[in-house]
Image (cartoon, rainbow, N blue to C red):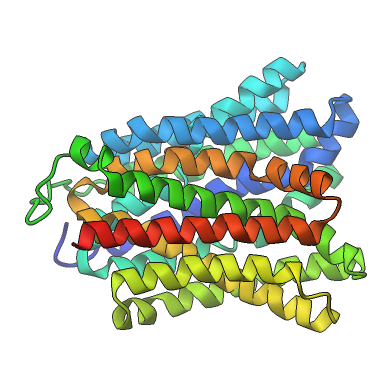
Length: 390
């Protein structure tokens, strides 16, 4: 940790995390239908391959976190850029579905060294007391990854092909992430003294509080991602046009920016338990409310913005929770372990949302169930904080 936070680290991570999410995550959302049409592979199979990649991110995140805690993020994030670019290249040339599946798993493995988790670990260590502002800045900038890469990817695919587009994305990730991480993350990585957080990593991971946090945040994340995928179909079921429903979803992204901007002020005025309770509960309420509000369209669109703000707050409270509860000295390892089940929830969320809608016979009931799942997650998370604070 340095007395004067290194600005080049934050600037670098803002660029590389944005590019990483754009190339490894959001490009797929745009190209998946085209890939299905061109190859004949079903959209379900293609989505399953992408979900396998998300699972790989969570699994690889555990050793990546340990490596970062031991020696810093530079080597891990450089390796992540190389592996992620190799995965995108494999996607571009995969002639069969099994090789496409392998390529997606390689992409996900690279993401473990490129996404928020390693960047959060770097900022938490090097920025010390300034970490809240730095994390807020990072998530604000990276939040525009979809805004930048969705239309760009669409344009490239229309003018070339999805394979050529993935090839160009591979080159972009390689030339941006690898040299920037190599040269900008050369700072000394000095161990942080444990202070009053004297337990070992193993003690923390096996504690009841950590288990409850992991379950609570996994449930909340599952509900969040399932609701995002189900949101447009819900609005269409509420008689909004597909175009207006898509706009509402997009405005939810703007709401995330609002939530993230508000987080620093809330962190200064609220204690940890109140902060966790407020932000996890807000996520649950803003999901459940769509089960009972039929309209009008303007109210549903406003609700989308508020729900986005809740998601933005939830992202930041999750990014800081390990530090707030157990200190920054073991952030990388603990956050890597915590990120594994959360990654699973992220991967299966879309399938859970679709499955609930099919079983329930409609999306309002689906959102009621998802709101309940998020509420259970909120209760468990608050209980875990209370156990540590005592």
